[in-house]
Amino acid sequence: MAYTEQLPSSFRMNAKETVDIVFSKILVANLFKDTTFVAGQTFTDKYNERGGQIYARKLGKITATEKDATTDGGLDLVHTQTKDSLVLIQKKDYISISEKCYDTVDNLRASGKSVDKVAEVVASFKEACQKKYMSYLLADPALEGSVGVGGSTRSARTAESTTVEGLTADILADREQIRTAGGMADTLIISPSAETLFLANAFKSGNSFIPETNEELIKTGKVGRLFGMNVYTSNLIGNGNTGIAENTEYVVYDHNAFAIAADIEGLRIVDARDFFGSYAQIAAVVGGGITNPELAIAKVTA
Image 1 (tube, one colour):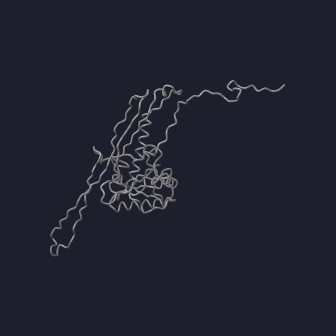
Image 2: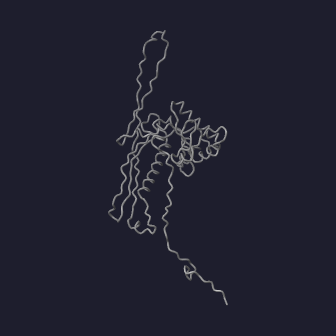
Image 3: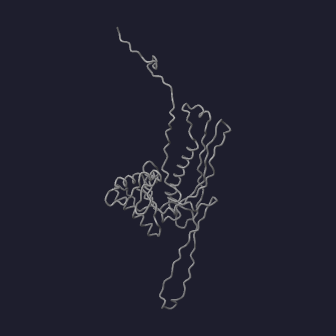
């Protein structure tokens, strides 16, 4: 007698299993770029005023006169007239999101779990702002005598760092350049590959990088300190990006020289007219840049 296999009822004669589709109540979160730029930490918003164009007055530097008091006219004053200059920050970049939210889609979800569209819109908007801020930081530096703000000065060092010693030496040289100009470098943003060099050699003799605890890394995004500078990592530079950002290894700067001016127009849920549902919307107009290119240096590899 031939053996006959008893197929379960979930199989049809075409040998394909048929199952009901069930949506899990667990949602897979979207992945967003690092939120590195925070007011008061990695940039300043102190210049923000009402208006589309903001002019900040940059004081001219007065030169003191020194001469021999015993010579003829040695006690006479030398009169100077130093002119101030203007730095222009324009709010000209409009960032907005308007997401369609269909009532029918939410009502028919088998999982019974709707997506918080407002939260998703805000997270996407924040990512767009972070990308725009990085573009300000990496823009071409303002030409001497120009009014508008620009980006960071390009480092004289263009060779890609392969060792923590080489990376540290380049950062110190650019930090010294800022100090020589009279500034104070307090912020260092590094690429993920530079972060790997530091963390992989965290306990190597001579490495002055001090990593943060895991808890602080999660809360603030700051990965450590180096020679008094707060060190942040950003996946908005380095591999996986395009243009200047892809080849940027780090940016060292005085955060008070990186100005961001932004006005949020609003965050709202608006009833739709042409379908049953609503729009989740957010919009802002922003502008920014480096107010003094001597206080910010970006290393862009060749």
